[in-house]
Image (cartoon, rainbow, N blue to C red):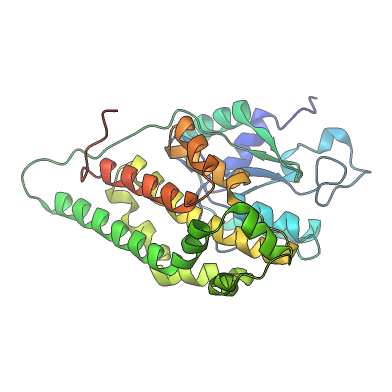
Length: 320
């Protein structure tokens, strides 16, 4: 048996029983958006020495078996690996079992498509011993509504408007996260978190010392209700919306981690943010956005919102 990674059979079974959702309790993040993979295959017992929950007595042939794997979104993968005391092997096995018992089965054709892509495009993520799905030929499936007015067409328009309203709510709820990123350089953020410099402006994001603050803001903005609009918009439009939502949450989580670790955890260097952005933006654009030293988060979100408006037919794509 190969020990280089999970077999296609194990990947199929894992994804089929996931319901295409993160296994973390109450998380609704999808593991795949159309042909774009956004989830991560995590090891319950870490694959390498030093990785979370690594068991030196585990047989090498058992490390990549389905029994030792669980699907998570990038944020919850980081959470379980950063808090081994709370997320023990036993608890993760219970989480996995509970999730698979209640998940909606995934159609066989979707299982085959996503599993093959996942096995062919996995890569090691940081020090966690997890496997991250890369983008696989994202398809744009735009709803072609007829010119005549009809209930479905009107509902599609309403869905786009509702999602845009939620995006504006996200902008309001996470305005301070974007603000501090806009006016402070990464080195200045680093000086604040390691105690070398006191910056009063950072008081505006003190609430993000608690991860629950970001979760509460997501709910207040209407993020939980967004899934109701998914059947009425194109796959790409939904993917763009999901990525914008996730970037707000992920950047906030980086602040929480910065307070915890007493050093700046830069969202630009985060594999989860990188993976999300590459799902909907060209690689050259992602590289440019991450290279910006100031106003990077604002520019990134603006770029994503432009893509949303273009896909919705509310703005023309640039010919440049």
